[in-house]
Image (tube, rainbow, N blue to C red; front, top):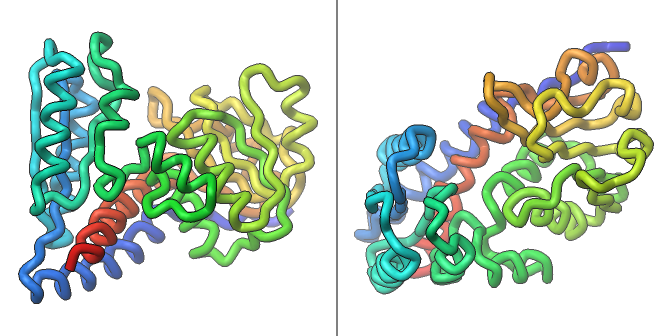
Length: 279
């Protein structure tokens, strides 16, 4: 079989960033600088790296980054109060609470304190509800980026059978809703699914978001299927066994370089969307 089309997320992210940068320039002409506020609770090294990356991307695109770093012992009430202050700040257009937070914090309560118009990372219950109903302003960024990859490479979604492995509230469930909104037939699989390989063999589009390295095997994939690996595990590997799946798939994302870079570009895009709504 011919080699699969490599769905280069870095290429998609760069195209998205170029459009975002042009929009930022127009906003700045009107005296508006799109601002993303990031909240980091504690000293998780990986989280610190992610927050730093987002700050650098803001700087590159001409946006403003407001970084809030709270101590490890922060309570839910203290965190929520900080979020309320950002909600009320007219110069802040997007709020991102870096996951995970320390165990004493009620993460869902903190997420749902974010104002819907500033929920650019798509983490609130209200935001997910809007996405599910087909009118959400800001879907979760990785699911939105996955749709962006499919669109960039002109992969048909309408009428396709998409199988999503994973049901997390910020990845599996919202990407299923976005695919459904685009007229795909969607099956959601998870750790309790019986005979998962049989489900995958029916899929035209596979989205792997299960959190297990090299989980999806090549003999589970229908020849010519599109495989999106949304997993990122220790050792810089995804949820898909790339070597075996690339021998069968018609198109496949690499890890790294798949949905990851597109996720950050869509976070920036959503922040600019929010800023434009207030001009």
